[in-house]
Length: 172
Image: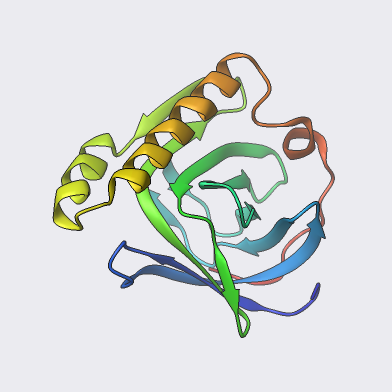
């Protein structure tokens, strides 16, 4: 699979695509799928600020975890931040990775500080999309576990922090 381009779709709970982009798979280990892409244009994000064109995004997905993690590097290669998406486990079919974004995000900065985002959106979408009780429980439990792991220093993991990963050729 490494070398091929695949499409990533972030979906809402009703299945509609919220965002889509192209990435290149660069590794599979212990059920972890690692993708890489880069930003073709500058992006202004309300919580991340300006994401410069050329920013590299290493994206980590697991088929049995209720989150995924994006590791952003500035165009010069320096670590920018980690971005946890609370989501349902991904599915993969015909060169396309899909996951349901459950709204809650956690930014972790290089100094270890973090910020939880979009709790109000999660509360609103629980009603709008009628999230089942098990989805709500998994999202909230996952958020609490990630926050606890960030506080005790076990997240982002050593692999995410120190693993050397190649550069990106594909854009988002």
